[in-house]
Every structure is written in structure tokens, then in C-alpha cells.
Amino acid sequence: MHEIAIRKHILTVEEIFHEGGPPAKTPQRRGAVVAVIHNPFAGRYVEEIAGFMDDLKPLGIRMAQDLAAALGGAEAIEGYGKGAIVGAAGELEHGALWHVPGGYAMREILGGAKAIVPSAKKVGGLGARLDVPITHINASYVRSHFDAMEIGVVDGPKADEIALALVMTTGPRIHARVGGLKASEVKGQDGLR
Amino acid sequence: MKAKIRKIVTVVEETRSEMGLVVDPPTRRAASVAVIENPFAGHYVEDLQELIDIGEELGGLLAQSAVNALGIEGPGAESYGKAAAVGENGELEHAAAILHPKLGAPVRKVLGKGAALIPSSKKRGGPGVALDIPLGHKDAAYVRSHFDGMEVRIPDAPRPNEIVVAVAVTDSGRPLPRLGGLTKDQIKGDDGLR
Image 1 (cartoon, rainbow over the protein chains, first blue to last red):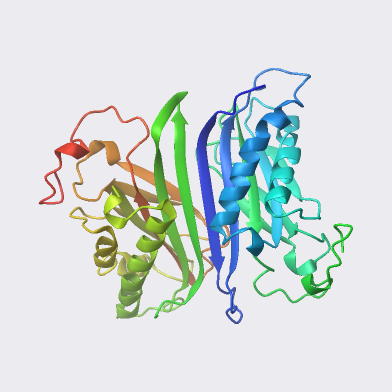
Image 2: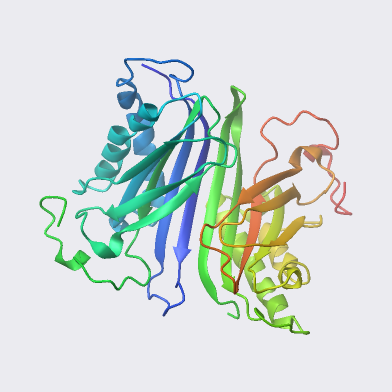
């Protein structure tokens, strides 16, 4: 059991009205929540790290709740993704610790979303940027909802920290028009279509 | 509304610990950022009144949105700052037209007061350029604990014909201030300096 030591918490909300085309009736909202936490495994190789996934669960739930609330509530959320930037004294595997608690938290808050939560991770220094992929919460193949949101922390992650991110959107890309599976056609059984 | 807004981005940053010490209450700052069309991109225009009016609109809009993001009432704000980044087809003077003549008054209206100059920065740049928004206490520019800065960037802006306009508001100073100088409880708040 490791204590979760949070240095910083950043919440970003984008409200997109248009991107050169006709303004949407309802602006698209995209949001990211990032927590910069101490990496308890920094600086050495530790074999047994998996227990930290359970330690991270309450943090994941809080982050998912905060983010959904900032975007207008869980029922407004249509897309999601997650990511991690591991500071220089850590390893990529430490970022992988976020898959279960980050994904579990969003699915729980969003009422049992079906699709796999797309993710990205890297090792990086202060100010490193990460493009967090986004897909529809119930069907990965919904083409209008393929998106990404760039996140980063100006003064993090320090070498012994990890920046953990969740992202959510309230709708398709603002001028989505390249066909493919539509959100209105989702069966929602297998998480894919 | 004169401003043609493509997107608005709001960031709230909360610092809960620094160098292993708990920051209690956490320091919090918010930036609200609008991406707008630059009506004068690509050619020299002598009269910049339209941008001056846009600055007035955005001052109130962005200050209110930053205060809302912090979940406080306007008078609870402690420091502020503003910044703009002009896309490659614009000129620095366009940023100045937005920031300086009229943006401040509606910001101060939202915050209740604001005797101090609103510190500012401006630049020209491409999409994703970093804006370092300077921060200073809203009623007394010399409050040393509140000298600060907040970096924001919008990955897809400014495009060549756009301007990014940011207003930052805090409910606190730096996380662990310990350099003396004028403190916030000593503010007279008459001249905007002390």
C-alpha cells in the first residue's frame, strides 16, 4: 500500500464553437484532468508494482467525477481516453499502472461504458506533451468520435513523479464528415460497433 | 458580439504540495482563453477600433469564466494578469489593441475592485505557442507573494488569422512565499501599488 501524494491537479475544459465551418448548434466540449503524483518506484527497479493499481483507484474515481462534472455531467459524455507521462527516474511500466484504475474509474462514473479506453503513455521531462487518444465510450469504431487532446504540465513531471491524465468529450469532432459508423448506429454490445 | 470566437479553453491549476510540504489551503489559479478571428490579418489597417471593442467584450467574458472555474465570487480573487498571442498574419499592435485600451474595466467589474495595473505580455507565434501570463496582486502591485506567472498554450491556435487572448485569475499567491516584502494584509489599496 502506497500513499498517493498529489502535488498538483489541473483541470482543462475546451469549448469548441467551430473550426472554420458552420458553428455547431451545441459547442463541443473537451476536457482533461491531470494529477501530478509522486512515483513510489522512481530511481530503482521494483519487481512487484501491480498493487499500486488498487491504491490509484480512489484517485481515478475522483478525477473522473471532477472531469465529468466540469463537462456538464456524466450523461453528457460521449468520448474518452487516458494517458500517463512518467518522470525521468521512472519506467514506462509505471505508466501502465494507470490502465486499470483510470479506465475502471471512467467506466464506473459513465455508467458502464463498453468500449476499451484508448491510451497513450511516455517517459518525459518537465513540460512534456502527450497526445491522448479519444474514442466513443460505447463503440470504438464510431468514426466521428476519433479525436485526441494534447495535455502537459509546465513544471512536471519531475523525475520522481507521474502525471496521470483522463480526457473526455461531449460529442463528435466539430465538423465531422468523413462517414463510417455513426453514433446513432451503435449497437453497444461488444464495445466495438 | 463582435468577436468571432472559435473556441474557449479554461484551465484550473491547484497546487497541493511543494517540495514535500503540504500547501494548505492549496494555491489555485485559472486561465480562461479565447481563440478569435483577427479581423485585420494579412494587411495593414490604421484604425484598430474593432479590436479595441473586442478586447472590452473578452475582458468580461474571460474574467467571469475564470472566476467561475475557480468556484469563487469575483471579490475573492487575489491576483490577475492578461496576455495575447497573434497569429503569423497579424501584428503585435493587434494584441495591444485588445489588451490595453478597454479590456481592463470589465475585468475589474467582475472582480469587484482591481486598483492595480493588470500585468500583461504579448507575442506573435504559431499554433501551440506558450503564453506566459504575468500575475500580480489585483489591488496592490507590490505584494511580493503574488508576483507569479502562468503558462498556457492551445495546441491548435493561433492559426495565421487568429488571436489567442487570455485572462488569468487566482485566489492565492505562490505556494510557499517567504521572501518578505509587502504582504496582502498590509494593503492600503488606494494607489494600486501598495
